[in-house]
Image (tube, each protein chain N blue to C red):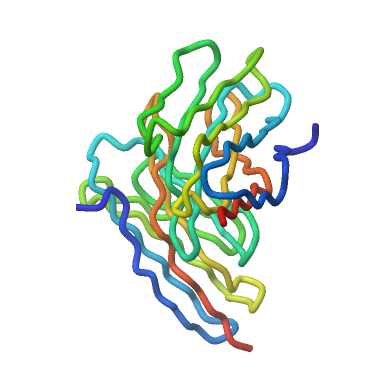
Amino acid sequence: QKEVEQNSGPLSVPEGAIASLNCTYSDRGSQSFFWYRQYSGKSPELIMFIYSNGDKEDGRFTAQLNKASQYVSLLIRDSQPSDSATYLCAVTKAGTALIFGKGTTLSVSS
Amino acid sequence: GAGVSQSPSNKVTEKGKDVELRCDPISGHTALYWYRQSLGQGLEFLIYFQGNSAPDKSGLPSDRFSAERTGGSVSTLTIQRTQQEDSAVYLCASSPPPEVGYTFGSGTRLTVV
């Protein structure tokens, strides 16, 4: 079982729609959860992190965490063509490096 | 500096040669990480330095790979006797304490021919 799993996509949504990106992880001891965005040919950039069960909102982005189900998601409201990128989920626990999923490619059409 | 600096940005080397990749983290960041990303793949963890603690080398794929961090700042990743499968983008990242996510450098694209 892979440590962090994501659907590779592509996930295609029209401009203005909500994009929902999902991630599952295998290590129940994971404590911190991150979403990164990576444009083609560029380095990953941090979008959000979440530590506690529930929702965390930042502008158009909402991260959702369910530790019992070992599930993390990222919602992007009012999707824009500029949101088209690969979204990487990453998890960690104290004293260890982030483990990344392979990413989901999002395409937002205008 | 303002961000994580990596050099060189591109490196083409012949199979069997040794290469050194450099990373200069953000000032004040105590943690430094190396990852690599092959075409169309996710980020593969290589090594992690945290302050003066012994590094976590659990991700290094073979004994041809090594890394050091001098003075708690600059890090060098060395690949000996390079192979074609070593071709990838090597990414360095740093983070402050407490950890609230990494900042990545722009990477070194390594091509072994």
